[in-house]
Image 1: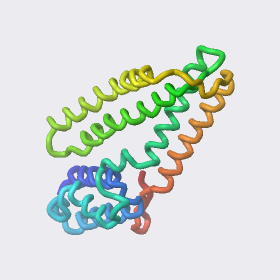
Image 2 (image 1 turned 45 degrees about the horizontal axis):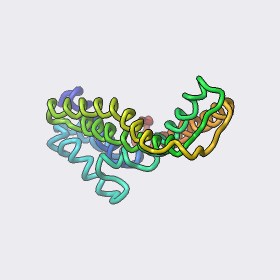
Image 3 (image 1 turned 60 degrees about the vertical axis):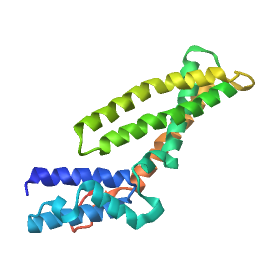
Length: 213
């Protein structure tokens, strides 16, 4: 078993486990088990454990509702919350650059929600492209679909926002207040991302093992 093939299997397995929301501690155990088995026996990991996707699916079954389909990695509440905070920050900061007052209306809030919903489509397509390990052609089509829907999503959200009445005005704030609130949203986004990454860190359980991402 070549080092390159073993490393490729490990990377694909790591990605598949992450996409199924398997906890970091369990991922560390699984990767250590695979690496130890290959090192001791020289057996092809596909023969011993199955393809990365198949093995990851079996491991995910241990956690029932907490892991499973890769789609859950996109639709999980923390991911949607991060995206919503980032979009709110942009909605406040962008107009504050050119105007002295920023006005939030019903239409603008509907536009944010519409964009958040529409962005789920390219994310799911990109996830499907990344997890397609058997067909380069299918991976390409999923990738192109993700790119196309990512480009079209803002236009769709803008159209929906225009269809909704701009009235009533919910709040009007000076430029400095908009920038301050946008900064709060961005800080909350960074803090949530950092907490998620730190709380799900992969650690090699073997003596002398090091942490992974």
